[in-house]
Length: 621
Ligand code: ADP
Ligand code: MG
Image (tube, rainbow, N blue to C red; front, side, top):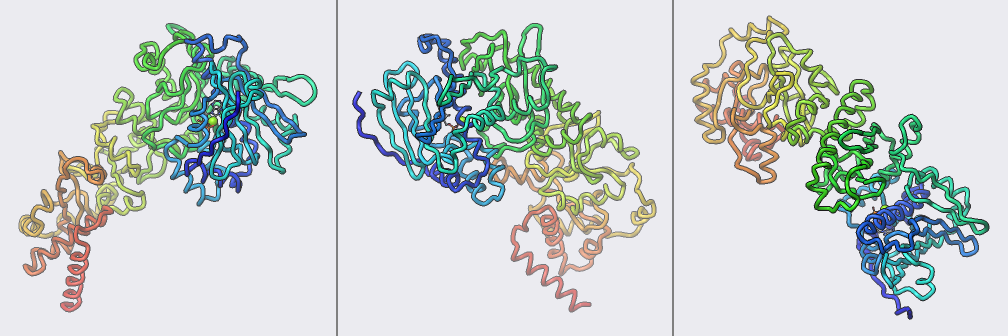
């Protein structure tokens, strides 16, 4: 084989930017480069084993794939070698020159701004490129399993890499798989020490299923990981530390698991389950393309990590499900419609939810971590998973006018006399919601109100819901009737009998002034001290959902109902003066919009109207 002259290629812009960050090491935990390379090597061995199910010739030599770590002090190089699937020329170019993950751009800009780059990198996982933290030059020699050709990828970071056909020596050395040689930076020489390598492997990669062999410069290679499929071991043999390590290795994470679920199902089907809920939110949690990352194994052979083993609203759960019954050669299409897998999915989903529920009861602090990070995702399930709606509502925790992290169970226990509904208000922030006039009448009765501020809240609340037989009801939609619920301060009720504005005349005047800006004007049950508020009609979308849909240009917008407080002096003044009735009416509408966090349709007209009214008041007073 004669090596053709190498060809230079540029890195994708995101890669160049990432490398720049790595080299100027925003990140002090350089050790993780080894974990990343071993994790890739392990993935490559997994893929080989999977492909060999239908093409046994790929491992005709019969040798099970392994991973070797080879330090060389004289050359100042560290090699990570695997006998996995390998890469052909195009794969080397595509995989080691680009980042396919979506959301990379926004991640990079956050990384440049943030001080805690370390944490963010942990969430992202920089993968192969982490090696440039410790290496000034990297040479990757690879042979795709079954191929006659070997290719060499090399780069010193910077803006690009070179790709060339391998020499005869390369071909002799790399029979199958990938050899990654790191030419270490001066300050990275410690990674040539056996004890350092062993320490890192034990900390980060002990549970890798393939043997990791340390090949010392003198003496025999020896295995330095335990290479057990931890999920197959009995719970009684395992301690918290073991699980933590397994979580970090399986999920490629740095945080601690907030929940661990390990069990074996026996019966119609047998399978082992080891699942974790992280305690930290990954950077791309809301990415549309984000899939769950529960890995499917069949009798300890990795099959797929995109088999959608859990519903989308549990996509934050990491871990492994290892089936004893599925066929090893199960194809991707079969994964979609396999009834056995559907059974597993259903059973495991139920188990995860039950486990979350019991964590919520027994370890509220651990549960709070999960809820803080993933609550908005779990709430998607209230909308999507009709069957488990009640259970998911029971799991949910809310900020309410009575406090934080309140469950609906607590809410229902604290219902006021004659209260038959669970009230909520959706909006942008708790602070803003707390000053929303729609809460006034509820507050006067001590009625607790859920303050919902996640974008997803506008969606799931649009389904007809109840909890414990109590329907959920928006305070900004339809009619509200608090008449049977007593006021906290009975004396405040006197106001009821005071002469207010003449309802019919006032409402007619306002309707006249507002025309088709609103669908109706009516006296409010919600308000006690504010003059007005806007609510959705009984059949219409709630106001917040309407706004979100309008932003995405989805669906027609409906006109709101203006509710007025007939006891408010501003409202009372409307019937008193023909000259100002129209301006005051518009002002009632515009105020209500502002209190909902919206802008008046014509802010300039609003300002001049307000000024005119104030001046008139000043002049008149
Ligand atoms: P990730 O592992 O998250 O996909 P990496 O940056 O670690 O990202 O690796 C990029 C890609 O390069 C991998 O997805 C894989 O396709 C390929 N790759 C890296 N190392 C190896 C290897 N040792 N053998 C085969 N393919 C590899
Ligand atoms: Mg990787």
